[in-house]
Image 1 (cartoon, rainbow, N blue to C red):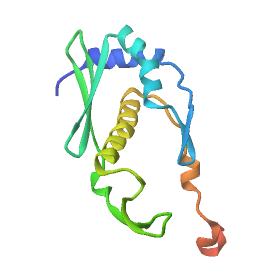
Image 2 (cartoon, helix red, strand yellow):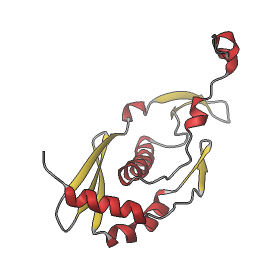
Image 3 (cartoon, rainbow, N blue to C red):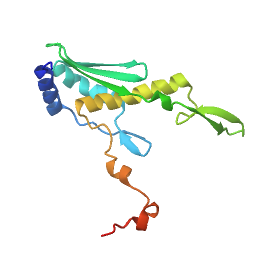
Image 4 (cartoon, one colour):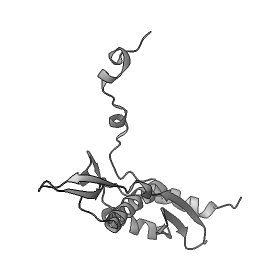
Length: 158
């Protein structure tokens, strides 16, 4: 296995200097840092540590590469964007007419929805690679289950 001690050392140093990222945007019940704000805050710190990155769509995936431009070492990650979920459903518009619309992307055509997914995955993939907290921790919210749907009203049996 190829050793990458330079880039991991620089990534560690970047993480020590990484700025706090305000969660200034809201959507889908949580707050997050928009991608342009992430870039604005991290680019000077990446430059300080001689790190760069690139992200590119490859078919149904997004490839993220973090590189050390002194040593030439890099770290890669591939994220599946789940394009198979871009499906059309029938909806009734405000005039009562039935029309096909992309599920979850009302008013967008397929290329617009694809672009939206790329932006979404760029934010998450880069944040994950760099160890940045760019959205609220929704762990507790995701674990909530309606007690009425649980056996015994949600009470544990001893």
